[in-house]
Image 1 (cartoon, helix red, strand yellow):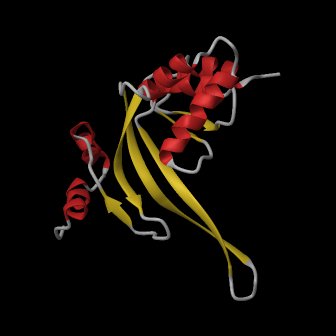
Image 2: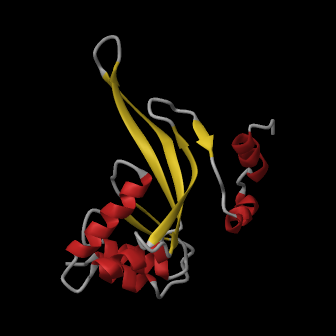
Length: 167
């Protein structure tokens, strides 16, 4: 058997620009956190009803990984490792002939930072759709994310949408 943890450990020997841990449904959360803490850049997926719901699910996954993982540790580690959560909504609707059609769209994006007293982390809505709508309403983008413009993010367009001004 060659485990995910072994693969991740071996990957640290290479100078990787990204480490991807696919779908997180249980104990693989520990490998995901190690990959995210490595500083090389990482991405993972999970299934949850909302962006903030994904954080709660990941906390649960971490606690199910073993008795050595406490709730406080799980919340702290996840809040420190995850910067952005993108929630993709999946909707299945029947076509006129009865065939199911599946459509996906980005329904919500939040940024995550450690520290809020009640939950152990704070979230900020970057944008989200209203229930039943597919058009996102821009909210706020923290100044620490301005460097995304260097990677092709349309910062001016985002702020124009958020303020209702023409780009």
